[in-house]
Length: 347
Length: 256
Ligand SMILES: Nc1ncnc2c1ncn2[C@@H]1O[C@H](COP(=O)(O)OP(=O)(O)OP(=O)(O)O)[C@@H](O)[C@H]1O
Ligand SMILES: [Mg+2]
Image 1 (cartoon, rainbow over the protein chains, first blue to last red):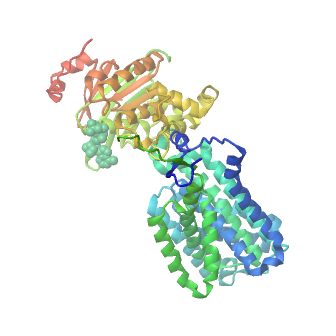
Image 2 (image 1 turned 180 degrees about the vertical axis):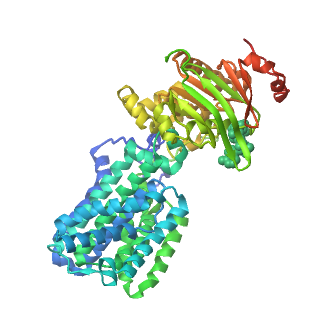
Image 3 (image 1 turned 135 degrees about the vertical axis):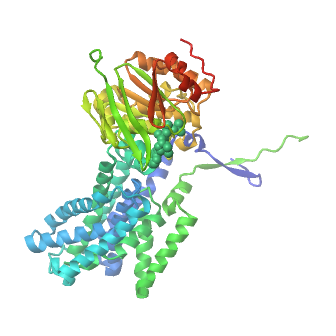
């Protein structure tokens, strides 16, 4: 279009569409369609093919992948809570409840992972909802503080009462069949959660979540029981997190007080913020950045928290939309080069 | 409409104390179906609190509220909506981060609207845009698709009204709908209010803009320090010396 040497500038060609709505896409050609779909297709394909590489990638990277998916599940859960205005500083609450329910079901009822994981997902989420229900009235930082304190409370309860194995934990649980099954299971769960949450938030039901976050009073005036909407959000958000706990319990054939460890709260929170909250893909992207990084820095031990804090700081201040939104925005920005018109003579 | 004399809303001895302040003090009145009542009074006289008490946003310290013959004193706000009471707020607070029409989708999607209007509404986005049109948003302008946080004040007030109408209410309570609206905006809204009255809706309006209020309502109740100090037709109330005193200089002309 432009001959070399002629001055050109970039011109956005998606502006006209953007002005009116973020939801309408006009795709002109198969090439445009591929441009939009390719990244998703590639990402999903890569995730599904990874387990097939089997021993070729080695146990280290397999473990990193599993941990990434576990944190992604917790970060997705965090993101759904945030969509209704509940900021969780204690994702390990859901993780621990799911883990302990799975441990109990397997150890005391001998159910095995096939039953105990789905049951623990549901029961763990229900339990978490019951625990949080009276606290849903709390706003902003107060809700955060309570969620921060609750996992610690559960830890101390188990320690002092000696219930559920006390400090020893519950061990000798039924393992999952093999590593490939483990990776597939947790990857499928993360993909399914990301997909389901994205669909959910795009419906009118999801719209109510956002409305509650914006302004509870007006949601009440519109005839909704805000407390109930929040409880439903908590239950839905708790599902993937409780699943993660149940999954890890069976993977390690053990559940102990570490299921309520701070790391299961700080990592997902940081992953969601770094990746970009509100998109349900950002948290997954964030997990892929944080977990490998945190594994690589294992020798630094608890010093890693400093790293998380720094990243939190940098991203909340520097790039609040997160990496995912930023990249997606740039990628979806359609531009063409146009020649800069010469000013007519005499001007 | 319900039987003659059977009130839609019956308020008896309503009282709300905030600490030592009696924001609403022993207020009683009836609203029959199809009535339009204006509530007036100086700033801080308890008008908004009265609305909050009727709609469940504030719990009374004494007195009762009955709606359709049912005791609804201290009811949860969403239940009041479910029974057919919709209200707007004096300080319009929309869902700032949502597009304007999505602000209306929320009440269109509410349990009451789904039950009452479900099939009638059809597509909810479409229904929302229709409702916005009814209150004077231009459908083909970019305004209904903007973020609500970017709306000028007059539009916000009309958005409040659209959100009430989306609930298909029997009783519509409007807290200073006209304040912040321009004369031409009010002129645009008045026919809609008249249409609502013609459709048998019951109206309770708190207003400072008396001249415009009296074009809609047929009775007036005046509050002062939380007490009901006057009630009657607009002409009767404005003729009372204590009312004239309170609205001194307001120069209200009541055209019958
Ligand atoms: N939540 C509250 N807590 C304490 N006091 C309150 C509260 N809400 C209202 N009040 C007090 O109750 C009184 C009545 O307030 P209200 O808002 O009902 O008046 P109003 O008639 O609506 O006034 P305006 O015309 O300014 O809107 C005022 O003295 C106010 O300060
Ligand atoms: Mg008021």
